[in-house]
Amino acid sequence: MSDLPNTERLRFRRLAMADVDALVELDSDPEVMRFLSGGVATPLEKVRDEQLPRMLAQYERWPGLGRWAALDRESGEFLGWFALDPSADGTEAELGYRLRRSTWGRGLATEGSRALVRHAFEIVGVRRVWAETMTVNERSRRVMVKAGLRYVRTFHLQWDDPIPGTEQGEVEYELRAEEWPTAGQERPAARRAR
Image 1 (cartoon, rainbow, N blue to C red):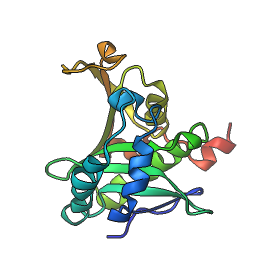
Image 2 (tube, rainbow, N blue to C red):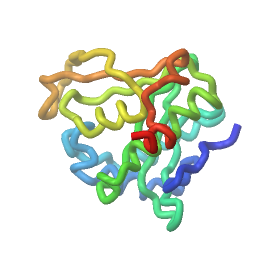
Image 3 (spheres, rainbow, N blue to C red):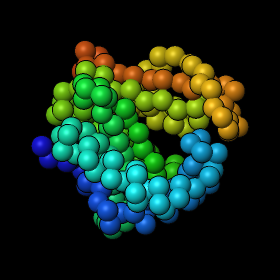
Image 4 (tube, helix red, strand yellow):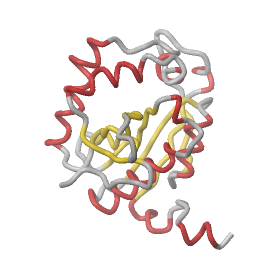
C-alpha cells in the first residue's frame, strides 16, 4: 500500500531514522509541546531510541496507518508530522499532527487532517477515526471539526504531574465509517456555493 497522497501544499512520506534531528527540533519548541508536556522538550534519546523505532515498526504491521513526515510541497522543508495511529486490531485510527509553530495559522493542520481522514476511510477501510486533546486546546479542537470529526465526550485523567488546563479534562472527537460520505468536511463545490 502506498503512502498518503499529496495535498495542495503538503507532501507526505514515511518517517526514517534520518528524521531524528528534525523531530527533536520540533519537540523542543515549548509552544508546540504546550498541551502535550507543558512545554517540556522530548529528549533526543527518547525520540531516537523509543519513539521513532516504534513508529517505523507500524508501517509493516499496519499498512496504510502510522505517522508520516509532512514536507512543504514546493521546498521539501520538514514541517512536522501527521498520524493515523492504529488501534490494537488496526480497525480504528487515532488522528494526530504536530507542526512547526512557523506553519500555524495557514490551514495546514486542517489540510493534512482531511487528507488523512479520507485516506483512512477510502484506502485503508477503518471503521472509525478519532482524536483527543486537552479541553483548553481550542486550535486543535477546531481542526478536528474542520476535518469532519464530531465531539463525543469530555473525560478526566489522573496525572502525576498535571500541566495547566488539565483540570478541565480531555475531549474526544470521532468520525465513523458509516458517517464518512456525508461528514462535514468542506468540499470545493460546497465552498463555491456559499
